[in-house]
Every structure is written in structure tokens, then in C-alpha cells.
Amino acid sequence: MKPTANTTRERIVAAASKLFYGQGVRAVSVDAVAEKAGLTKRTFYYHFASKDELIAAYLERRDQPNLGLFRHWFTECEGELADKVAAIFQTLGQAARRPAWKGCGFLRTAAELADMPGHPAIRIGIAHKKRFEDWLKGVFEADGIREAELLARQILLLLDGSFATVLLNRDPSYMESAGAAAATLVRAAQAQRPAGRFRL
Image (cartoon, rainbow, N blue to C red; front, top):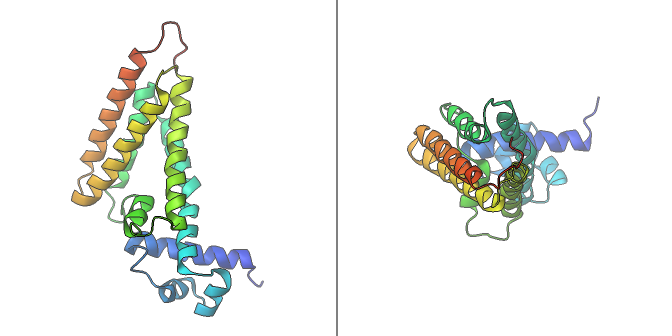
């Protein structure tokens, strides 16, 4: 069966995802991606107008699966809301102990493209982080927390800060410490809720 345009495009993005996450977006050439995908460079350019377009597709491919993992870890954790939030950090800490872990692909790509703020991949990264923040905001609002938006932003800052710190010094315990801080913030916010509100 002859591969369709969609499956060929997916092969290219899958190959690029492995290379970009492992080596960085600027270190990997179009030639390397084409070779990894088992395609010619001409075929690559039939599906992607540029490497920049491929970098954007790489992050788009990570968006929903990553958000789905965060929700899954949150939902599967038994305990109170603060424990569920901390579980996201704890599970990431476990992942950071694996040799293949290279941090947050969105943050690493943004750092490499820091001199290109209008790059489509930067916009995708911004949207990804906002979706995570909005999801947390909704969770906190459902629990009756007054300043749900502020709390969600604080948790995001702890998460991204821990990504950067663990990538720098390779000590996953920083991720777990950030999770403990997040749980403390959640409990403090819950203590400020109006009496009689439903609690998760």
C-alpha cells in the first residue's frame, strides 16, 4: 500500500520529534530528519515549506499528549486537591530520573528561538502553557478557591521553574520540592474559601 500524504507527513514529524527533543531544534538539520524518516530531502520539502514549519509541527504534536498526561496524573492520584497537584510534580520527578529525559520541549525550543519571538513555535508554546494554566484555573474554581487564576499561574511558575532547575543540575528532587510548595499554596488558598462551599 502506497503511503498517503498524511502518513508521510506524520513520519517526518515523528522522526523530527525524536531528534529535536534529544538534540535540540537548531542542532538537527533537514537532512538528518529526512534520513531518520527514511525519505528524500525533496519529499520533505513536498510536505513542509521550511524547517521552521516542522519545528512548529513538532510542538503541536506534543501539546495534547502532554496536557493529557498532566490530567491523568492528577486524576489518578488519591487524596485531596493539594495531593493531586503535587502528583504532577512527583511524576515528572520520576520521569526526570530517566537518562532520556531532556526537560520541557516547549521551554527548550523557546530558549533556542529566543531571538525569534514571532516564530510560530513560540506561539504554540505560549498556547500550550496557557491551556495548562486554564485547566488548573478551572479545577481551582470548581473547588471554590477565590483567586483561582492567580493560583494557577503560581503553580505554572513552579512547574516551569522546576523544569529549568532540574535540567540545569540534574537533581529531580527540585521537582518534588516544587510540588510540595504547590501543595502548600493550594492548601493556603483553600483555607480562604467562603464557608459552606463544596470541596473536592
